[in-house]
Image 1 (cartoon, helix red, strand yellow):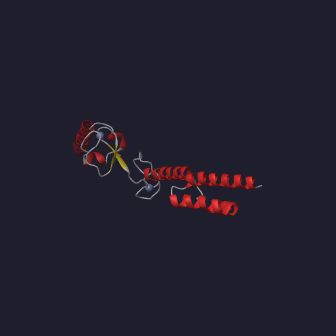
Image 2: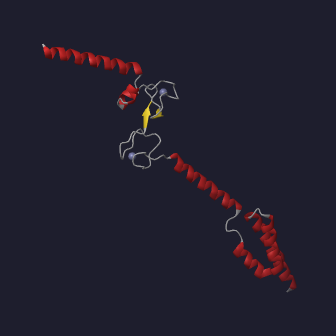
Image 3: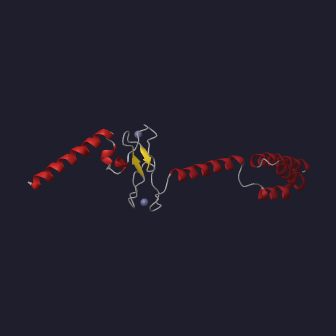
Length: 165
Ligand SMILES: [Zn+2]
Ligand SMILES: [Zn+2]
């Protein structure tokens, strides 16, 4: 009988030692837990099961990683300044309230912040003229859009003269 109790005592002490080592880095906590079971035997062991940290260190570490990943997801998705709905970083305008979010570089087409005057990808200066033009023009080189504009002005000028005559 004494042998069985002794074996149980030793087993529970060793189990507690391994268990608390996986759950706490705190030396005092470890010593207290093992001491509790060693001194109070079965009641101490039951008490330990109640007071021990709920997660093992590995579980806590994994949870913190998950929380970090979740936080990053939230941070990566910006919100619309107009209606504060979630928007994708690749969007040029908010689909809900039509707020302009980004502009495309007039030279290389990369998405730029609206306030940027120079494209960080190709160093092209973003002129005021081109920030307001439609999306289909933004992908074309600066020279093309300028040429198109001058020819349009020219033709309207001719029409104006025609009407006068
Ligand atoms: Zn919006
Ligand atoms: Zn560019």
